[in-house]
Image 1 (cartoon, helix red, strand yellow):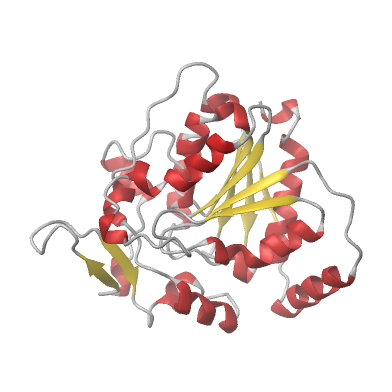
Image 2: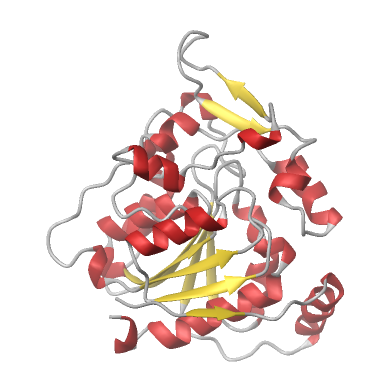
Length: 293
């Protein structure tokens, strides 16, 4: 399956504010039949999609934002989440609850790519398109050192950045991690508006790293994940899932299309208009089209 890269133009945060404000004053457009399901990464929550949800819903799309275990308003302590299946249960429960004939567009950010992959493996017939945004895109999860090298962020160059939790005891591997507040702007949000990373600093929670690194999937019988088109959106100034890691994952599991954003790790904050445009474009080019199959 070949891939093509498509770059987008940069907008300023003023452009974003104007777009969001203008959209809010317009009458609601006719509804689309497409349903986006947005999945956050480690330490995040459904709150991180607030700009994208606004843009999509004001354009008539249906949007669901999922809080994974220990994320957003889910009350679970990250140190008690020890398996990926447990961590991803809210998304799997959501997919299970969909009517048999309903299809959704899954969008996973960062480690949310693992959640999207597992959900697509298990519910392929309910997924019309999978979109990986600055995401870990491994078809079967972490099975070897190469998978870890490609899909796990290496932030060692920034120094001692993590607050770690040891839910299994001090002599056991850490069960949770959170980037310290003083490092968050320059690692996660260096191109994002200050008000957004201020909000994020108030809402980010420890993420269940032991559960995430245990993510391993097996291909389901029948029409599995290979029957679902998938797209990757690269983030070229990403300090978390670095561009060379994104390239390796794309090379090893080539998506139908590759788009490019000149953004940090959090384009839903730093480049919301461009990201919205790419989500809509991907839907138009791949959902219900044979081009991506």
